[in-house]
Image 1 (cartoon, rainbow, N blue to C red):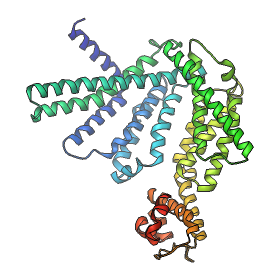
Image 2: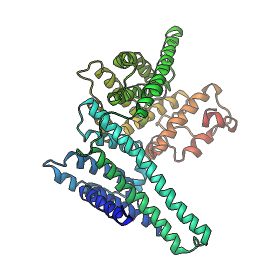
Image 3: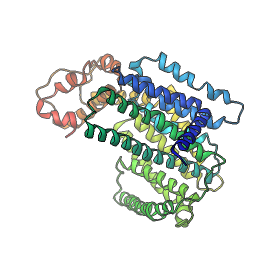
Length: 449
């Protein structure tokens, strides 16, 4: 096949993709314009942070309504995002992308929406969909790196050999190419790979490659056995010594449990299944580790109060517990139900004001700061913190001073300046609070060291 025929077929394929994914393609062109907006010396518009969520919404609706009566919802899915980009001030968007709400939306809610749009209630099909998304993402990263590498190598070689990279026109061509590669080309390639993978005409077989079998059976499964033994030994130590688990154990248990169920899902489509006894009884095996998780979470919250991420940790624990209990029975064990429950819980805690993780964290840390200020004698009758400089302090309260600073720092980090200024009388956390203590204790009170 000649180069001309190859390019013609490629353009024909892309033309079909753009016709099947018009909204997603429009978002790619907007990203390209945003890239050039920055290129011409103007700051990148903050509406770019909405692009991943807009693209995920459009793609999920495209999958969900392709053959349905609600197809119009897909064609107008871009309108709310454009309205948000126009009406929300840039400062508010800039502040939002640093919040846990935005992180949860991009890393959890968007992928779950794409998975749930497939409506795969069967475990094997759900596992195949997960594998398809992961394999597509990995292939896209490799292709993107290769294309960027080739383009950069060509132009760097030209610049070195002919000394033309100092020419402004040549630099423009190089940077324009990078912009097109990382927006329009990469996005179109992603849509093409997904379309090929999920098209009924090109649906791949359920069996996975030998490499996947090897990773599941000879790497991940043995690692789970070792980690299970470690957690059981630690649980025995806690019982014998009658002590509380460390707070960080909760994160370890969550990672272990969810990894175990992911490996169990991957086994749905492996060519060779090993260790069936372990994975058939996985819910029973991980039940004792749930005790470790919830004990560790309770201990951490009692000691340090809620933050937005600790609220999300509780949601992770709820999803993990639901998954464990659901898979006690073959009839109720469905990954689709677990994904739907996770999406609902994270959406509620991220966007419903009454159950907002950020609001719970701010309220908890405000109350904790009041308790610590009262314990240390820094709380005045009107509720403000006494910011009078001290030459000497009670060294037995150094840990309390540090913890009080941590609660105040959380309010400061979450931009809750109203509480700091109006409730505690602190205009500048680092100048007003930490400067009231003698300098020789600064490291202990400021950093806990």
